[in-house]
Length: 142
Image (tube, rainbow, N blue to C red; front, side):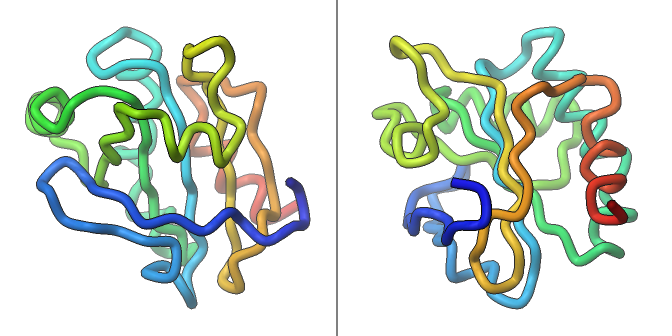
C-alpha cells in the first residue's frame, strides 16, 4: 500500500456525520486504527495525539481515529479524555478491511499517513503508544 493511492471511503463518525477521504484533499491525513476505546494503550495513543494536535495541525495533518466501537462508546471516549479529533464508527469492519487493519476480526494497531494527493506516504505498524504523535511528526521531517 505504501506509495499507492489510499483506498477511498465514505463513513460515519461518532456524531453521525459522514466523512470521506476527499474531505482531506489539500491536507495530510493520519488515519489510525486502534483496538478499543478506554483501554490503557488506546487511551495513551489518543491522548498523545490530543496533546500534540497544535503541532500536527501546523504540519497540515488532520487526524481520524478508527475502531469497531459504537458511536456511544466513541462519544464517551472523546468526552472523558477531551479528544480533539473525530472517531470513525466501523462496527462492520468495512474500513478496517480496506486498510488491512483487521486480523481474525481483531483490530491491528496500525496507522497510515496519507498526503495531500491521497497517496499513502508512511505506514506505522510498530506503534509506541506514548510517543505515537511525535513519531508521526518526526516522519514528516525524514
